[in-house]
Image (cartoon, rainbow, N blue to C red):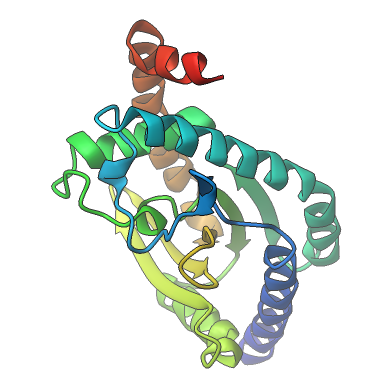
Length: 228
């Protein structure tokens, strides 16, 4: 019975991935700055800083425009959500603009990379899906996710990464299509880990709330407002 249930879950998640990939292909995931799309794999986070104010403003506006496109796909996502809700919990998240800039700021100033990270690696979760499964174990969840993405292994469009830190544990699958399109993130959680994972997210949310307060006190908002 357990084997049959796992097989059904794998089939449903594989079908979900097909639908999400089709949705991903309908969105222009490029960031246009200075009239041209940014190569997100060869351009580094340090470019989006107050040391480079013109690029900073254009990147901010390009990210904001991309978020507007993501808002437009919400209805189509709801169709996917309705289709699979009887099999597992699925929800979506569009990253808050201040959370995005808090993350860029951390990777520029606090993280060991000090800005030496590709933009696409840093901004890999602007649009995300959370799929929560009621599995017996974290290892079983890994097996289900790995088997679900197996049919796509030759497309080089999906990347599987375990994410375990600070009380949070999940398996992430990233959708990518080339170096000029932003990625989407799919988080796979165990139902039993939901409370701890949400608590971990809350801690990170507090960090960008502090950043937002500093943002309003400092020069960043003025740099953007001057351009607008």
